[in-house]
Amino acid sequence: MTIIDQIKEAVTIPEVIKEYTNIDLSKVNTRRKGFNIKCPFHNDSNPSFTVWRDTNRFKCWAGCGGGDVIDLTMLLLNVDKKYAIHQLKKDFEINSESGKGSGDSKSRKIKKQISLVNKEFNEKTLVGIHQLSNLDSIIDRKISAIKSIEDLELIGELYHLKPLINYWLDCLIHEETAIRFYTLKDVNKFIRRAMQYADKRNY
Image (cartoon, rainbow, N blue to C red):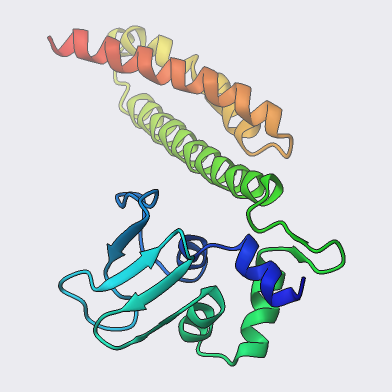
């Protein structure tokens, strides 16, 4: 089996679209034998780009082109056939020695899933850091506004939160993922309780 045959067997048109374009296929039933999307090559008000899963081919009915995964990669990357084959082989980890492609294998899918999970976790960590920093600033403002013993008694509990907040902030920037993970769970629980308490007070 040639490298071209391996690529055509291992890589699908939807995978190439996901890899090299910003087109969102999440709302498209890509399991159908054939489906239409907006063409990535022209201003397409009505979906005129057809993908056939059974033959792993595509066609733009407005005249932008058609063909297999290699033809599509050439058009999307604006490269010749040799470079398109090289890029597909690299990006989809096609193993020419074994005659098998791993573009559709578990390893590549797992890598993408891990990347998405890490991205989501990092985003949630940043939200936690932002929430704690805001709370720390609020406490500082409350403390600076103290004018009487009564004021001190009202915000005394808040003052004692500062060491805990600083500890959590240190943990959320720790290099060990496990420490950040369990700290984020504690922070989220604390934030939820704080919001519930605030709602009751407002009520």
